[in-house]
Length: 457
Image (cartoon, rainbow, N blue to C red; front, side, top):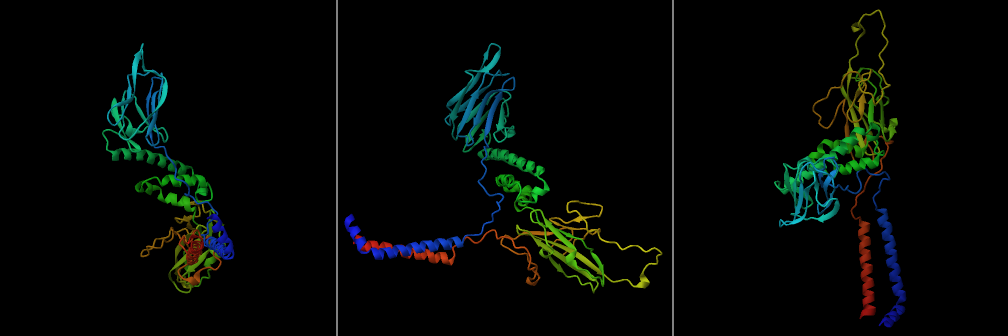
C-alpha cells in the first residue's frame, strides 16, 4: 500500500510540487499581510496593564498566652480549604478550647487546655499539623482574649472577633462566617477587609506621591500599575473617591497653559495674542509657539466682549483648552483724561510667573486642569455654555484615536502641531485577510481532492 502511494506521488510529483509551492507562497503572503495590518503599539509601558494581584484575604485564629506569645494559632489557607495549626507550651490565664467539626457535627480535631500544677496549658503541646476543611465545616472556639486577624496585614479583623467567651464559625465556599450570619454577611465582612487594605495602599501611595511623578506617566510605572490593579478590586461605590486620581496616574499630567496678557484692552490697541501665551507639560516639556493653537474672536477696532482661546495637546492625546473673556473698551478722549502733575509709568503685566506657585505676590491665578491666567482680577464664569470652562478652569479630554489637535474649524488647525502616536487600531478582519483565508481554504480543498483522487480511489 505504501509502495503504491509512493509510486503515484512520483508519477505526479510535478503537479504535487506546483500545488505545494502555491500553498507555501500563499502562507508567506498571508503572513506579510497579517503583519502589515497589526496595530501600532507604543513602546511606552502602559500603566495598569498586567496580571491581577492575588490577595490572601483569609483569617488567622490566635489565642495568646500570658506572655503575649502564641499559645494556639490556626491559619486558614487563602481558599479556606485547609488550615495549619500550631500549639505551643505557653501558659494561659484561663481555660480555652478549639474544636473543628465536619458538616455532620462530628469532631475532626480538638485542642483543649488542662491545669499542670499551677499553670494552664494546652494538652499535648507543642505540636504543628494541618487539617483539611470544606464547605459546612465548623470551628468552635472558647476562651478569653481570642483574636481573629486578617492575613492581608495581620491586623485585627474586628467584625470576626468573638462576640463573647465562645463563638462558632462556619466555612463557606472561599470564605468564613459567624454561625449567626448569612453567607452574604460573611462575604461582605471579608470584602470589607480587602477594601480597607486596598484603600490603605492607595492612600499611602497618594500621600507620598510628588507632583512631578504624578504628572509624568513614565515615572514609577511599576508602583502606579500596582495601585491601578489594586483599585480595580474595589466595588463601584468604593472606587468613586479615587476615580480621578487613578485616571491621573494612567494619563500623566495634562499641559499647563499660561496666559500672560490682560483681559481688558482699548479700541485701537495693537496686540499679537499668539505671543501672550506659553505652555508646558511634565512629560513633553515646553511647547513651541507653533504647537499652541490660538483662536481669537477679539476685534480691537470695536468695543465689546470677546473670547480668546488657546488649545494644546500632549503626547498622551490629552487636549486642554483655556478660554478667556476679553473686554475691548472705548478709548477715552483727552477732555476726559484726569488732570495730574505727576506722570505715572505704564503698568506692565508680570510675565515671569512660576507655574507651581499659587497666590504669589503677582496674584497668579491658576486654572484647574492645567491652565493659568496671571491677570490680577478674578475671571468670572459665564453662563450658557456647559461644554466650555472659562477663566480659572480648562477643558481636558482624552481623544484616544486623534492624532492632531483640532479647533472648531479645520482651517484653524496648526500645520505644525505635534502629532501623537496612535495608541491602537481596529482589531477587526480586513478585506485582504478575508481574501487570504478564502485562498487558503481553496488550496487546502484542492490538496485534499488531489490526494483523494490519486491515492484513495
